[in-house]
Image 1 (cartoon, rainbow, N blue to C red):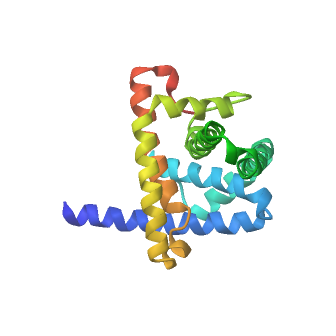
Image 2: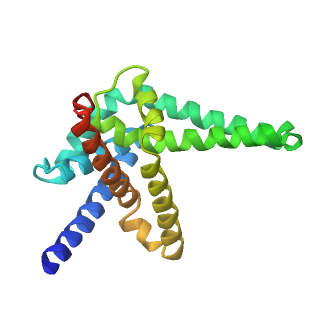
Length: 206
């Protein structure tokens, strides 16, 4: 039993290293800016497939096929994330300006930032699990902040721990990079999705 679990951990780490390398290669292939979002969506999609035992064949072939399919549909999403970055720049300017004189304004802006960041984190597991269109693409991840607060806190703690681990050993970034936290986030949310689907059939994923 112990040997079986140990082998599963080794296989998971090996998978994370491979899918992380694919993510990096296709971010570059997409020109970084245009490649970042479709590569991240594909990363979460491949992780979800593995966790649901739908993983087929070589990871590179699966990643490549899904990436170019996602590339075509993710342009509006890329624009949305670009708008969020622009909003952050604006918020920074406000905080450095009139925000210094208003504690309430600082609290509101920082709380807004936190909600936006958390929505951005949940966007990827929610997007690859559900068949979403229109405003639901953004609304559904936001609603999940309140549907599963325990999972959100758990994800935040894990991301902080991962950041500290990477700071302590930067070499791990090259091997595990985005793949490691994405694997954890997808795992936590997939368990929640499955529990919701057991109680609410309409919450079943795509």
